[in-house]
Amino acid sequence: MLGAALAVLAAGACGSSDTTGSDVATPSANQTTNPTAAGIADGKYVENGAEFVDAADWDTRATVRIEMGEMFFTPKNVTLAAGKPYVLELVNTGKVKHEFAAGAFFRSAATRKMENAGAEVKAPFFTEIEVFAGKTVELFVIPVLPGTFEMLCEIAGHREAGMEGSITVTGTAPAVPAPVVGDLTAGKWIQNGPALVEAANWDAKKTIRVEAGENGAKMFFEPKNLTMKAGTPYVLELVNVGKVKHEYTAAEFFPTAAFRKAEDAIGEYKAPRLNEAEVLPGKQLDLYLIPTKAGTFEIVCEIEGHRAAGMFGTITVLP
Picture 1 (cartoon, rainbow, N blue to C red):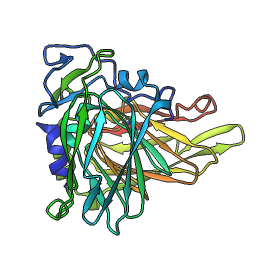
Picture 2: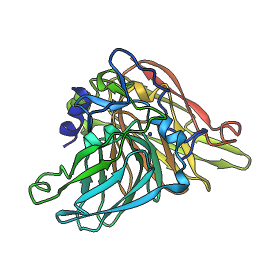
Picture 3: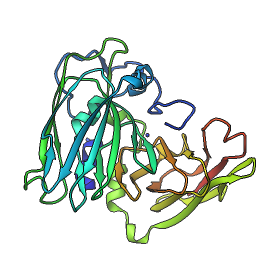
């Protein structure tokens, strides 16, 4: 399922700002602004999602509840308006896990974050979101390009049993900011990441537990400095042992790692790369990834005052 969903890629509120983490895009030879065609072409994505996230008035967001069960989406067909901020409330009312996959829609929208009762995950866009039985995940998005997009559950047998539908985005693409549509092959993530993830022996993965918390006026990551080996699959267990929420940001490291998924007790979240991960007190979020580039990279909590209180460290990747 992962390989199929991420194969498209081969053809990210807890920081100092609440953005997707991507740079502001400038149109180039392989980019277009204000696209007029409905939908989005294969191999393309809205590159300047951060601009839409920053410009939106999230107090005006609308919530759309989408229930997932055996074997259905309710509603089966969802209608959204281009340029308007939404929270898609993905509720699994069933007894088995279900998946919300809408690849073309995800690539045509601006993504702020995934949020649940224990964590927030920020990425350029998501490729799949799995929700465990009885759990709820919220996806903060702004539809940008109009069109009709497929949504489905790609778990074996679920689509065949009727678990599919559509998302229709009405209206016209916003003029300010203007959408910048770029090539997936030029995205700031490991281009052969899906192949690396698919080929890795995840049964032999190495696990590193990273605790975040407070000690009086001081804050910490423990261990403060991590060592990993390039080409080896890892699970980073991000565990918040403190009393306030904490964030894990590694802006230079994450784009160099092949990202499989983030997973917690509520679901699984897949994307071309991770931007930021936030964990609430007493909760845990696991990152499945493969480092690919040797070097030393900073890891930090960008919540106001946390870095100044000592919440930073390093990730050293050995060849």
